[in-house]
Image 1: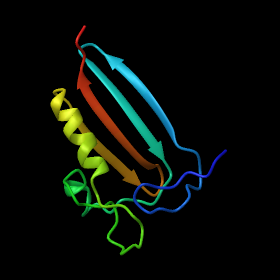
Image 2 (image 1 turned 30 degrees about the vertical axis):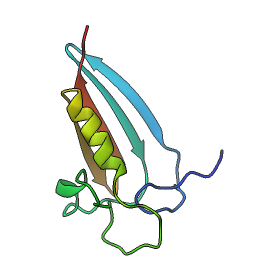
Image 3 (image 1 turned 45 degrees about the vertical axis):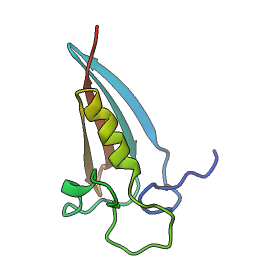
Image 4 (image 1 turned 45 degrees about the horizontal axis):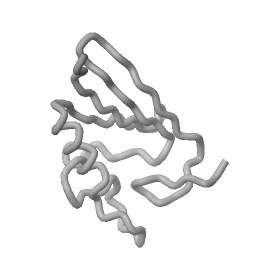
Length: 102
């Protein structure tokens, strides 16, 4: 498997990333999960704002903090939302939930 790097730390993942989608009446969700570094609770409320990174540690990485903001804006444009769940035990999961158009 090619080496993948964490979007928030630029370090290789220690385990594989996974994604899944779910459908409920009127809603569609897609989630991406990995076992990257925990995103501190204090950073989570602002994580989807522009120029915010998922770490409070200074880094020489190239992240400027726009990726999650762009994903959030796309979800909002479709009437949806995005959230993050992050813990030492479970890793981190980003979930986008949007209304279905069927």
